[in-house]
Image 1 (cartoon, rainbow, N blue to C red):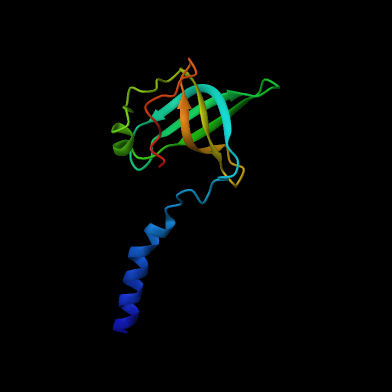
Image 2 (cartoon, helix red, strand yellow):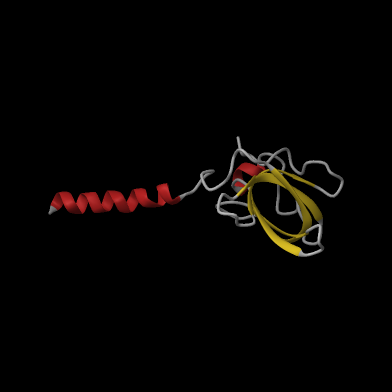
Length: 124
């Protein structure tokens, strides 16, 4: 009984570590660029998130979400809460979700002038 209890405790501790998806949920063989207007920018743990509305060729609006590294890592690379503003046009460059969801693991974010924001996204 004691061994079973220890095993269950270890599984309980290890489960959150394995649940963290990392890059496995994204297609690392296919990089895409999505241009749109920022609707939300969350500079919070565990990952910085950027939400945009992107207009398709047919004029429809698609809602996309991009995920960066942690705010701690990004802050050492030139990012802050003020790096991106709601209403600003940006281009998200990254790997799309394998599931088909409109989500990207971001490699870089380009500002309205086409230049990268911050030094990089801290994905290395």
